Amino acid sequence: MKFLMGVLGVGLLGFCMLGLAGCSEDNEAAIKEQAANVKDTGPPANAPPPAKTMEEYRTRNPGFGGVQSGGAKAKPAEKPKQ
Figure 1: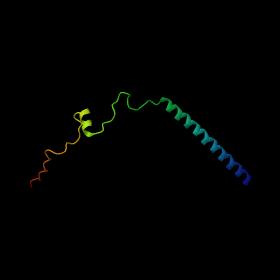
Figure 2: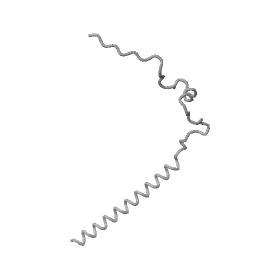
Figure 3: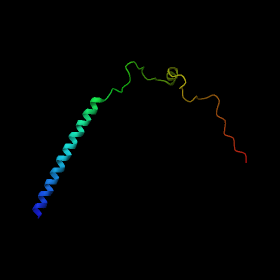
Figure 4: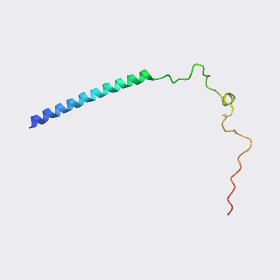
């Protein structure tokens, strides 16, 4: 009985190892297939270099200057009347 259980254990372990090896081959094939279908997602060749200063950014992107510093400050919230 011990011999039969040992043989079955070794056989099952070998079968699992073969199954895992097959799965890794499938994964490698899928990765290679995906890599072949990947598009170039880098910046276009005619894209300007990134802005070095905030002033340069504001001149390139009017309306997207960010929060204005200085000038008029926000009014404090009014307290509710009770």
